Length: 94
Length: 250
Image 1 (cartoon, helix red, strand yellow):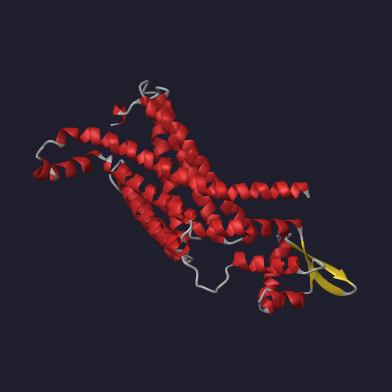
Image 2: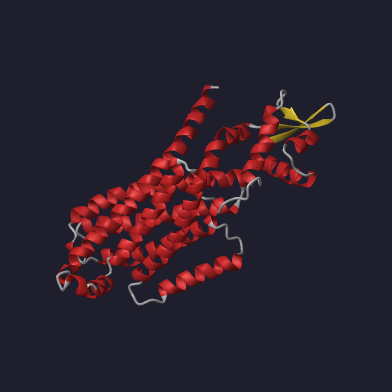
């Protein structure tokens, strides 16, 4: 089924979240920055963050009382394979 | 009719079917990987569909291997058992798989609609006169035809070699069921009788010959379809292996 143009699916949203964390110079991002970078509402971002934490693709760390998210090896693996995974799902019409 | 086909064909076909099995399992694996990352049900259903396709081909491959090994001539109970339940398993697995492919391709999320599709397909196949392979092939053609239309639209928007290969492969898979349908004696005889006005009765004695040809074409188109999918999938797998090697180097 053709996707509506401009509308991101779950695979792309996960990619955007992980890429936002990876692109940060220190390799860590504050929750508010992640919300803006990944273009999600607070509620939606919380849902995705919880899921990614369960899947061990991101990790929560606390530095000087400030909460940050960092990307794990599993998260890096997803980013490395995203393009091919995207192509795979697209050519099979998924 | 199977008696007229050289037994070496079944040996060759069993070997070639392993390409189809392998190819189906790769698709299943890649789709499962997508499911593991996203937890989206459509990837799981698609993965399950190709797992079932692989298993159905294994069931058929066992029967073909047994024919090659001469179990059919011995009229053994073992062959009878595999022949009866193997075909039944093949129909159930493949029909379920095609339905899952259709559901994921058209993104059908309504559970009642999914149930309706399953009920209509299974009741039609299993309420038909035995053997139900004829109706099964007709239903398969309809399901695969709609999947192929969708994949054509994907190809039209992407215009990539991979999307073309997937579209053509599903087209060939549909064609293989058309050949399997033509393999039916009554149907082919009927078509040949209808063509009497054009060819006279010349074609009538050739019914069995044509059925053998249709049977061979059916298997050939199926193997070609999965060979196409296999080549497409190798491009996805290759990159995965390279990325893992790089990770190890780090």
